Image (cartoon, rainbow, N blue to C red; front, side, top):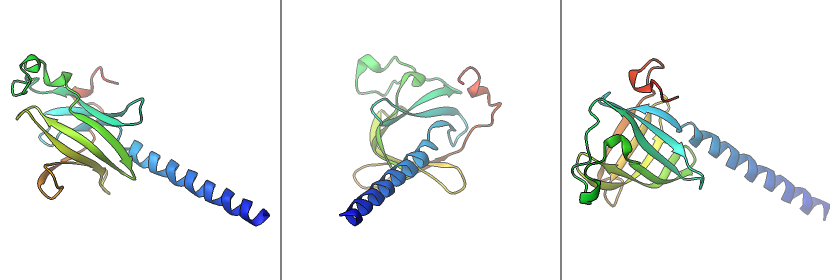
Length: 151
């Protein structure tokens, strides 16, 4: 019986340690990222329900959401849009979410992951991940104009 208790305790410790490591790796995704075209800063954050989301916090051209299928939303600015929604953590990847592209008005399935060089990849796709596009983002410089007043 003592052996069984020891095995259960060890398994519980391994599961707890693994989940803590997984949470730490996805938490590295949280924060500010600069768009590939260097024309915007997005923030990825963890919500109270343990899902992840993202929003444009600064844009060179803070254009309106004119392509939205909902006419009532076409007057909102791009910085008002939570364009990444519904992600859950799986290792160093966020999956199961969507990305809204305000330039087209389309929403795509999406996954986000950290690269070994510290950059972030965001892949939007239709149906299968093979049918999509990947954008690579980097952390903005600490003195980036888009970060003023955000921290």
